[in-house]
Length: 168
Image 1 (spheres, helix red, strand yellow):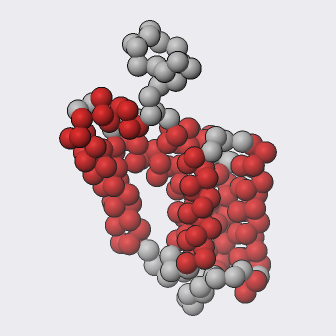
Image 2 (cartoon, rainbow, N blue to C red):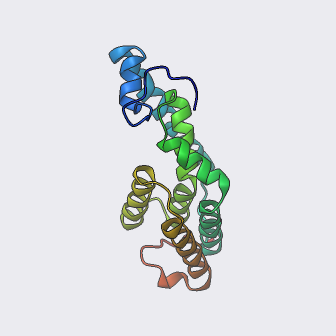
């Protein structure tokens, strides 16, 4: 703990994003924060759009397995903590949240970006990871389930509902 700057609440916690945005320049700070945060996600979206190529189920399965493994890494844990932590500049916050959900976004791309069912499942998982504290008793089985899904995609792609197959 650093020196008390008077910004902690009664429980010793730092203020959330909203309080920092208000303290940092009033209503002018909010559009700057949102704009830079959204710019990070827009750049990631453009990169995916430019680099995306139709792929087969082997690539989709391997990407899903890689995403499950990423969920177990210290890098993912770091970005998840940072994404949940007190405010940073919008671009830095965006990068932390992008790093926190990179594996889930990879699954979305691998399973086909047009699958509404997979979008809903992955959005719910990303939201839960954003709002809930990390818990190994939950996070490890989720990561293992993602890995198992990747193995299923490789072994029996027709058994995966909503998987859109792109012939190679």
